[in-house]
Figure 1 (cartoon, one colour):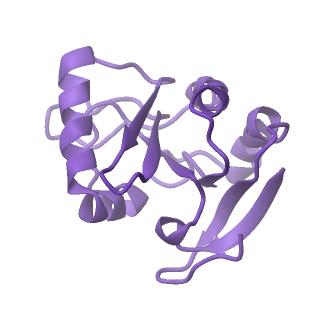
Figure 2: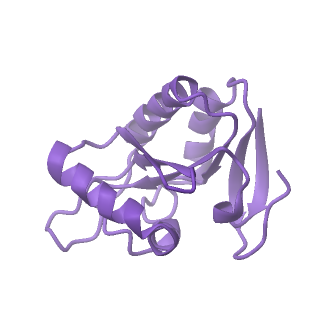
Length: 160
């Protein structure tokens, strides 16, 4: 079941949240920056993961904090062209692969609810009208509530 909500995804009571990034992302803008500020160990662990495993776009990496917060990092964007460069754009193929992998991971990890923003539509530069049907295709038939944060409102908890 998908429900669109407005609010601050980092205040979500969902069992897990997801967001889009690129391999070797610097987490320096948008939701990724907020995650880096709230969960600095996630950023450190993500960089280590990328240096160790060289993940590709379309893959998903799950991180869990000491507070048991689970965050799925969806590699929807191309990696930066240079070590200090900005992430590349997202593409619909990578989004499809990420969401397919996310749906499988939700089942494997026994996730009871999920919060996800309008992935790949910010820095990734995709149009929501193109991404939304892919979210519905892969997450719409799950037996858990999926909260799509369609509008960011800092500091406001969404009615989930």
